[in-house]
Image (cartoon, rainbow, N blue to C red; front, side, top):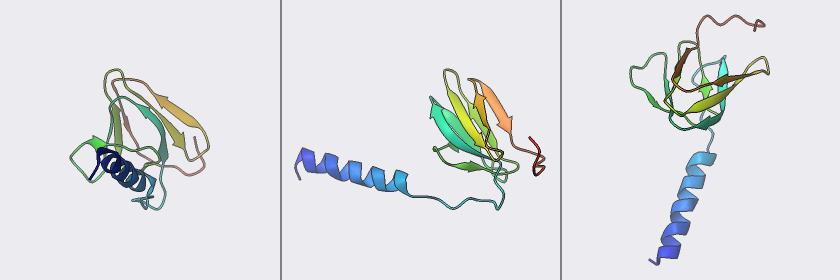
Length: 101
């Protein structure tokens, strides 16, 4: 297989993976990752391992988000506001109260 075909295959596979929509892990989510720069990770509420987070991934009650040095993230909240998270920050999504900021 030629290098050009290999590159096209890799791009096609990556586009298909990133374009797929995962079902939310909870009925009522608190925030959704709008953008990320650098190293941004999440830890599910029921999990112990941190993993990279993808744009449009949602956060449920009990989940955590952290940004490393020279990293930042922007979260879209359910009340249609945004929360910008600076470097070296950890956010814990807890105590969900409907219709309150």
